[in-house]
Image (cartoon, rainbow, N blue to C red; front, top):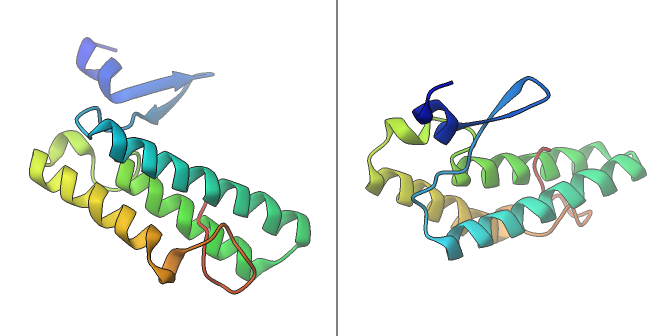
Length: 114
């Protein structure tokens, strides 16, 4: 991988994972990673309780956080800085809204995918 590839991808055990958008403000990255952690905790809890509805919601939460971080969806390096920031802010706003709140709290609100 070239230097550009190294900035875009993280390789673990031969598998490439897209890196977080390096141009996002640190406080936004921290907030999205916090939401990502809540989503992953929701996935674990839903699996333990064998609750498909909560699992689905928790996976949606993880997916939304990862999209906000630029780790899923359109590649961050293909978007303008304004579009990248807008995507991250919109994802965080949605995660904090009632539609995707909580880490899989049993009411169908919360969650995504790990």
